[in-house]
Length: 275
Image (cartoon, rainbow, N blue to C red):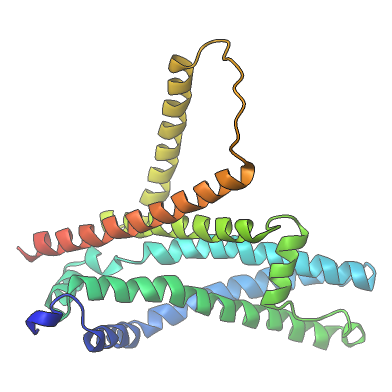
């Protein structure tokens, strides 16, 4: 490596991304097939009950709403699973050797997998959702040709519209809250993957539950100890909007902190395992 690009080189980074995709395309494809199967089975199963009865408008709205909930829940679950594979190579001796011998900096290796398993996953997830939804449409248009007007695909825009209709997202701040929460949730499992390459999903989930319980107990205990028994009412000028903005900023900052800790843990593991 040249001294000026010992930390990051775009050409080298592109080669790392290409190598990652070429060597692991089978595992990535298998995981996407699993997500597609989950979408197809759930949406087809729901369609069986929705298309048997009900008016046209009611059926269309019910199918869209169910597709929206399926999309949101699977996005959260599969985003968590995808992040837990961040450091899967480090759990075996062969994987560690291949990682250590790769002529690229730890930052380039970390960033390549982070992009693939974060933003690459989101793009692939939308594509797989679309394929799963069209599977429902094709099956029921063949099985129920008389209901072709009712059996329509639910696009991503329709999913977003349904999220607004059910009140999960009502304004731009709610959009940023959803993005911030997803990034924080995903970053927590990225950090867990760097700490526990083996059984990452279970260990990180348990650690998250334990941290949540400990934080709740400490917060409750602190309030109980330091707050008076009959607190004086104090008017506050902090609006709900300001508090939501602060929470959004905090979640984004914590996501960056988790990713940074995961990167430095990866560098530390690289040095330890080398020797």
